[in-house]
Length: 376
Ligand SMILES: Cc1cc2nc3c(=O)[nH]c(=O)nc-3n(C[C@H](O)[C@H](O)[C@H](O)COP(=O)(O)OP(=O)(O)OC[C@H]3O[C@@H](n4cnc5c(N)ncnc54)[C@H](O)[C@@H]3O)c2cc1C
Image 1 (cartoon, rainbow, N blue to C red):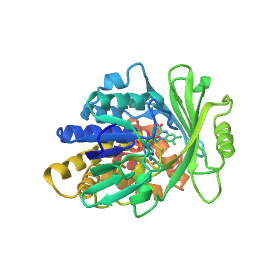
Image 2 (cartoon, helix red, strand yellow):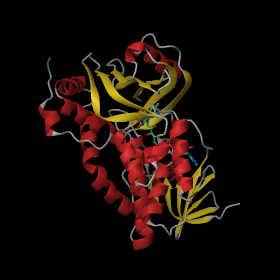
Image 3 (spheres, rainbow, N blue to C red):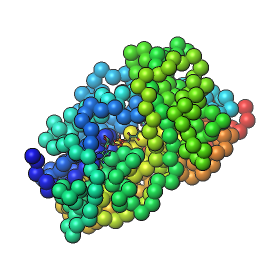
Image 4 (cartoon, rainbow, N blue to C red):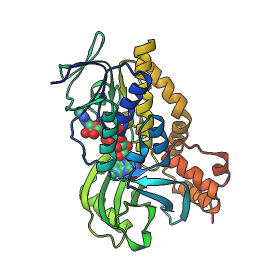
């Protein structure tokens, strides 16, 4: 039986939770930290398994042994994109990305957290109560600050946030033999039928690819059969994928404001997913790290943890989030996506800017905007 009172408790041991725990340990080595997760690791998570280059940089800065985390995993250099109306671009990316099944990636992050002496415990959080000097979870676990890194269906968010996530997508993924014409490349093909929507194929290095399809949740109900039919129509010839799993994606264009107080939400719990690509691991790691540092700062130097986190998030990701949210408002216009892909087709650096905009903290650069072409 472990102790029940900590400086910081992190709920969820996915990428945002592991980054948060590592950041607390780095910024405040004397602080006591507990990570709880309802699952034992390794555990699966519905995901495309695509890990941006910038994730490696962030993990490295947090002290993770990235050689160990990515040992034996595949790097992919090529990205092929097809717009809803059929504009295509296929180029090498400036930085290779990784494709690592989450069953492996997340378990290795947890291993790294444990190697740093941080306690990780299996526990499913059900109730959250504010106390005079912090937060009480399930009537027994006490912390001065709690970081809710518990994913898209976050219990922490449901019990503490003032608003619900605004824009949410739904996606399904599985594993299938790679289509020969896509071998070795990451491929994303968009459709105007249920726009914004796309299917992907990301190779995992053993002849199979992580394949999936996602679209924005609207007014129509969306069944598993709908998602699968749309996947097969966008990737013709695909065998029936194994290990199918669907999950919701809370997009950053509908993220809730960050309030004052001792409960900080990070990653999917804070709706940090890129609204154009559905990529969320980079934003999970960055927001987890910011939350961890904000918690340590509040405990060591004083001030409100939520206020520190809000300011740090604005500084680190504010411009990127403003650019993606602004563009998402025009996202219904497929002509804009066509124009972006034509820019990337014409110019490698515009392509690099597009990739950074979709996978990390890139901006709408003058170079990219200047190269937008609304006609072939
Ligand atoms: C189909 C699909 C494809 C995607 N493809 C990509 C991609 O290719 N690249 C990319 O970057 N992003 C992708 N994403 C997004 C990415 O999966 C998420 O953004 C990312 O997992 C968020 O990390 P997180 O740590 O915030 O949450 P999670 O990874 O969801 O981790 C949350 C953790 O909290 C635990 N938990 C939940 N509730 C509780 C509770 N009550 N008590 C205790 N523990 C709890 C869970 O067990 C879990 O381990 C995809 C998402 C989907 C659905």
